[in-house]
Each structure stands twice: as C-alpha cells, then as structure tokens.
Picture (cartoon, helix red, strand yellow):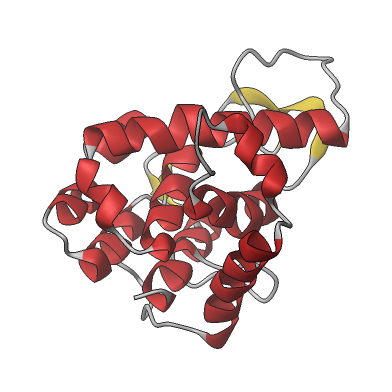
Length: 195
C-alpha cells in the first residue's frame, strides 16, 4: 500500500487533457505507425510522454544501472544493450514507442483483458509500471488482480508496492510510484486523476 496519501491533482488532469487534445489535433500521429490496422491506444502515448520519458531520462550512450545491475540506454532500454553502444534521440524515441506498445502494453492486456475497460489514466499508469519493473511482475501483481475486478482506484494504490530495489524501499521508487516530484508526475497521481 502507498506510503503517502494518493490524490488527484490539477497537473495530472492537465497532462491527461493535453495528450487527449494532442491526439485530436494529430500531434501524436507518429505513434499510429507502430500499430497494425489501428490507432495507437492513447494510454501508450500518455505513459510514454508523461511518465516513462520524464522518469527514465534520455541517455545516448549505454551505461551501467547500479540499481537494476544491467546496462541500459535511451529511456531505460535494457534489451540487448551492451557497453559502448550509442543511439540518436530519434532512434531512442522509435525504440521506446515500439517497445512500450509491443512488449509492455500488449502483454499486460493479454494477461489482464479487463485493462481495456479501464480509464486511460489507469491503463497508462499500469503500462508505465510494467515498463519499469517488468511484465511478469505486473501480471502476478495485486494491481492486476484489482484491474480484473474493475477496482481502478485500488489498482492505482496496489501498484505503489513496487517501491523496492535489492529488498530495500528506495525513495526514488516511492516518489515515482506515488505522487511524483516537482517536475514529474507519479504513477498513482496520474492513475487516480483520470477516475
């Protein structure tokens, strides 16, 4: 359960509204090329633009992540990453969109079909969580069970349990999972702001 109070915020509501308006205006049309025969789920865009990119940051040369004990690059990409690799900003964005859609959103929907019925903010938060701590962990989580029961707010709160690394609670993960910081939205903050 969360360490801090989880509550909707004006900034999270504004972020949701901005992405929805941007989609209507065609600002995110580039995302559509990654989906077969359809428009991109707005939750993928919301997760990528308002949660994953701000929290992961852009790194153009592979580096060692001491918490995860793995090499990463771009926006926290770990798949196939080795020392000395480099990418351009465009390559990083392309990699992020492909992976968020194919390797995170699609698999968590497969293990939790009711996620498609959840509000955009809930879907985006769950996608972001799976991107950060893994699809397998998400599919075994209490958050997933709450999604299956249609308990959106309970799912938002349940995902805050993923606040540990190496068995210890990590302040940065608490902030990311809950209410964010001055510059970045928290997953639970965004999640409950769209209910």
